[in-house]
Image (cartoon, rainbow, N blue to C red; front, top):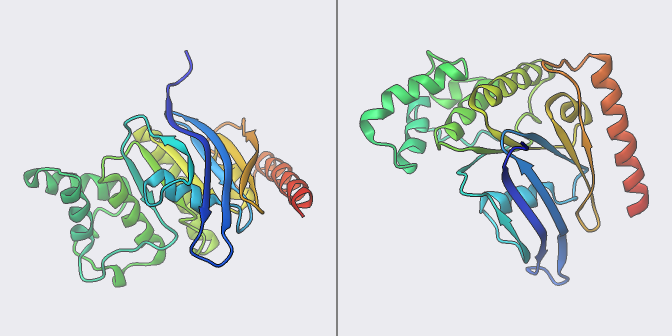
Amino acid sequence: MSPAPALTVNEVSKVFTDTQVPTVALKDASLEVAEGEFICLLGRSGCGKSTLLSMIAGLASPTSGAIDTHGNRVGMMFQDANLFPWLTVRGNIELALRLSGIPKPEWDGRVQDLLAMVELPDAGQKRPHQLSGGMRQRVSLARALAQECRILLMDEPFASLDALTRDTLHEEIARVWAQRGLTIVFVTHNVREAARLADRVVIMSPSPGRIVDEVPIGLPRPRRLEQPEVAAASGKLRELLDHYDLKAA
């Protein structure tokens, strides 16, 4: 039996009208994501990846079409960790627990479990400025998981990190995804990142932003960036990106 859908996007368009000339950021996007699936939205700047993610998160409304998360709670990670600098690591996670309605007597145990999950068990009393960029993103992941989300949206969360840190966090997010049975929608413009992480890559093209293709990545896990199979899959993705960019030009 096929997994139930966790997310359905049906003919969604987004038009921004706050400029002199209306801008079609996304046009007629349709997508279904199964429970427990890891998909990447791949495309160059301006193809509507982040716009679509924002609408799935409920941060923006579609101009037309509909999005259904099938009752699943949604969490989100951004490119910047966006931690509150005046709060400790523990305080940042506790805030997410409070906003999610988790009873206060449960906070201590949950914070410790989440910090252990992202491999920062001793970081609770530190403040964001005392952490490296990779550590801040781990805390951001813990905060997202504190929302009891079943769908995790990730908007280029590792783009600003150095290659070694990004490689480590690829391993971490794959581990957490498998342990939690999450559904993940991950935005990237990096073909190697998409080939390494995704079950399926959704290719998007600009002018206007739209979904133009879907590519299953049938490689066993765990995967490494330097694997020949990952390199071959990323080469195919790049060829498709170039093809659709030429058609859009």
